[in-house]
Image 1 (cartoon, helix red, strand yellow):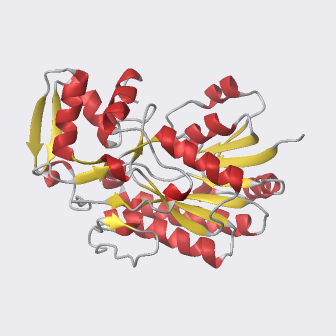
Image 2 (cartoon, rainbow, N blue to C red):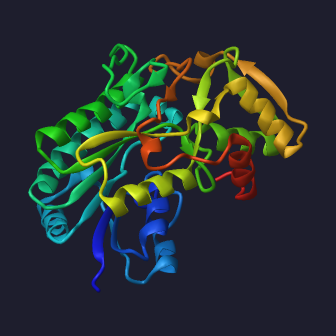
Length: 319
């Protein structure tokens, strides 16, 4: 039987490459990446399968020849996993203009082409669209922060992409991701657990911003992949939005720092810093954000706790 075809944008990044590793034996894969924040190298794809097609491509800057190639690849594509985006609070803080403009240009280039195909789109949105909301439910009204803080431009772009997907009437599932982490995630862009683990082991210290009472809810990438596998295999939640996260892993950043130190058994000093001594005025800290996962639990309940996540990342050398 001939395999169905899947295109993955951002396929060298943390989540894109995880999807590739999980689905290469089920689908013919086409991987697209601009190699700006990749966690694996393109030649590593051949270790999975010599049948994977890889294309280095900047989706924000497609020329006519590249658009023709893109349209041709879409003709027989069953699933289009759109995971190409700026990653990490730190990277977005360093160049928010580029992150905002780039995502806008990507949408202008690829969404009309996907709309002309028969591919079903899995779009990696973000919990950022919930702004400063606490328990976040897929159907609640959304309120994003002021444009004076450019961090919210990232959230606005994600939400606008959701609107555009529906406006183009593209068959889709929108995934709002809540702190999906795990082995292979880079510590270089402000990803909380990999960054804390690296600092604890290499610098002998862990940085916490403010009083550390901010809460986050972490989800292991293995749980993420199991949920995606069920979604795709059973063709569920057609044209719907789904939170992907683990509500049982809600923890304060202060508690997380202590848990990392205790789990790794390292003598690391915990430093409390002012958020804006490290991040610019274009960014803003979130006090508490956690997912309502009632809808997710209709198909899958995440199982991996925070302590296990820490161990898995540390064993993988942080990222």
